Image (tube, rainbow, N blue to C red):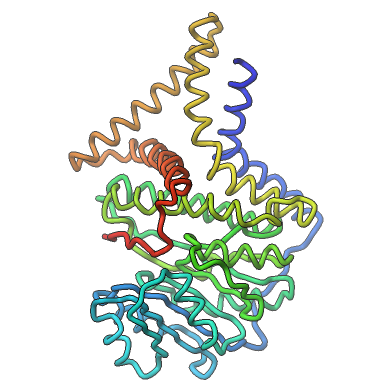
Length: 388
């Protein structure tokens, strides 16, 4: 029991904290031996296609188009494609009024990946930039992304996702904002060590020539598109100077729905990304992939339950003070999480409780997502989450 407890505890701490520490140390060592490349100046700008898949976004689509048209990039070098397949509101009609935009629309809705596949033949740019319809980019986002393609080893570039959180934020908003700040730091160090292990659909780009079709039933298309390129031996770069801004989920229920979907997609991707999981191809990528993604999406949430149960059994059979202390700390943490849920349900904002509550919700979502995937209950069609 004690051996199982320590193995479980080690994996939990490594997943959420330890990997960040190990990554930081490895990056520090690398900096000592290898000078970082400077891609600040771009001598020749590539032609770029900005691809946006939008489903029933009539309330925000005009604002999104105006945001994209105001990007700081030569007009003759950028193409805008909006694909609105399946939209039953006025999204397509509103897009059609902009002559600068290529509109692709069919009444059938077959999921985001199917829509992207249909749009690929219309792409003219050497670089394709993907962004969501409900996010807004900073003016220099494209310039910041494309500079990394001066490195021929770079096959994709991920931008940063920023959650707009105000002072009256609820647990879902504050928790999501904190989570993405930590994720951004890990992504920065991942790239500095070797490569990112995926990309967020809010903003990422690829060399168009490297695009590899993924299955139409893919749940998290952005992650799979980027990782299939990494499986070819290319690097997924990370650029915090290119960022997509969006508001947080409308409430905890909406955030939970989104997280469960991502978790189901994470399990699906693990079964399909066989080369990324094989250290005989790209060992550093495999190390990063398992440490940053696979552990979170598979065993770690279950280990939280196992560690607690083992701790209870150890305390019941021994008098070692440490195990009593560790059990007390776990009980306290989960009580703080329950208190966070209680106060959240009553719209009482206590920020100290947001992190434990969001942490528990996130791990519950992974378990729920795993069961949903194996029950084949997760559709590839995007379940739109309400935003603030």
